[in-house]
Length: 342
Image 1 (cartoon, rainbow, N blue to C red):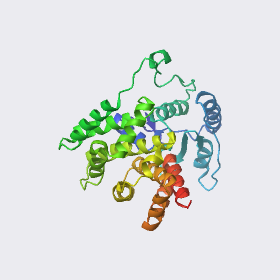
Image 2 (image 1 turned 90 degrees about the vertical axis):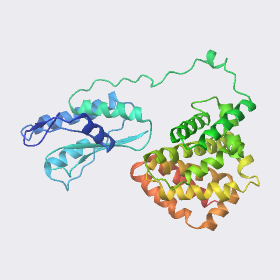
Image 3 (image 1 turned 120 degrees about the horizontal axis):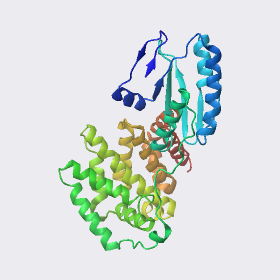
Image 4 (image 1 turned 180 degrees about the horizontal axis):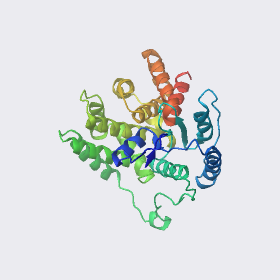
């Protein structure tokens, strides 16, 4: 439910609420001009209760006296900043008949963000109950994890061969499924770490032609929602593989080889993806790949400087990340720093 400043009440449909959440709009509420004392007290309680009910939430009141008195008072009390993950709330004054709170998630888990958003929504309506801080997923007991036997190298090669065949078909749903499997197999949070390292190494070394097929998919001129999903899945595979080998200390074995694929295929494809990618998450994955490549290979840094346009592209990504996406900002900054390290 929402109420405008004229006292009219309207219901918000589920679709509208979903769209609003995606755009960062948390909800709408009206605070009567006849109740300024109650309104101030509620916002004070709002801020104090949020500190107690939402973990790691730093509530910081900021004054904006250039706005009209009522809007300034509300905005002063409704500005919040949360550092880990970054959560920003502010009053949108572009709506003349509504007090609209906008929420922006620039870092962290979407499920956690959804929980925080609901907590703020409840608090805005006077419900300051403590947010359930139960874990979002169950961990595997050590005694069970110890029983796991990772697949052999031959088994991994068979999986990559089968995935490569699926990627080369015209079935886009099959391509996406295969890519998501490879992304999961190179993600140490989802698969056995030693298996992830083996899979990542084999992919980047060219086993079964997976990396070449992935580049072909990434370079496709098809532009629709499904191709965007495929592109993101390809970037997930490369980002997971490069980051995992970088963290394990094995990245130099791959990037410092005489393999021209990194300079002739991967690097140009990543640059093109950064230029064309409409999604900040996709840009984040590209920035992460570039950051790892530039940090781990002096030849790659020389190639990037020689190419000439990379720093400008990364600066655009940096500005975009600073505005709305903390991970994009971090990885773009890391790539720029590595580019300057000659």
